[in-house]
Length: 305
Image (cartoon, rainbow, N blue to C red; front, side, top):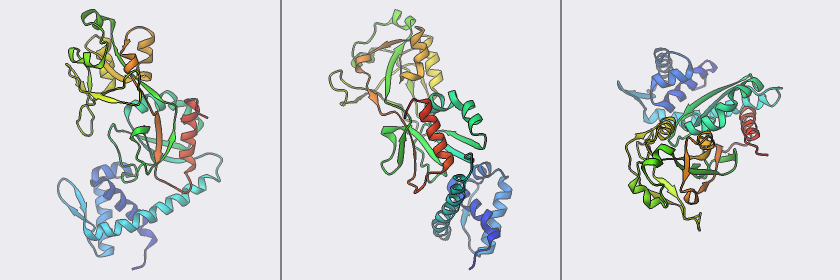
């Protein structure tokens, strides 16, 4: 069966629905209604004379034929996208939509402080940021790139450092230390109220990480307990400022509170450094101009040459 060029929008819709497994989310990404997207898929199935999806009230799943078709469609669409991206190199300014998946802490530390300047410098780039504290499949979910701590980036990804190492800090308010003595070792945390972070995706509780003062490479985890569990870092910081408990975060996230005395460091010798944030993407022969613009901008703002 020969391809009709008019089918290209429907093929893009097909790939989008397959990626999300849901018409509503796919419609939101595509900028159309779920009903219009469903009609487009049904029309494509009619033209191809094959069912591509099994539909239920809750989700859609690829049929065997749909999965085989998708395996050929996605690379072809990728080549088309790469061809259009290559045109960016001939323009004076990079352009297009950049879909980036990143955790909230990376958004607040790396992107938000410089967002206005980036949009002024690159007015033809539209940023589409998805805040996700889990471990997204940036390729399978249709993102241009992800940002994560270096230790959490898969080995098969092309990763570019956005800054140097980061340090962890354990801190509490002066009011908290009026009630409790400062811990001398991580083992002392058993007697403290620790503010705990819950991952939104998995629901798991983050275990605090430490390293002996004489061997920073020997990182170990400590399970803590306390009166507050949350998936929001800002809530944890506010709670720590109010004397609810101790927190364990990237030190850059609470620099202001540490400098003005609202929070006080403890266990500093036990707090290790980790690889900093990296922007990562699938291996490509040529990185899109718009993505290179974002990387260079973020590295500039973090003082990386």
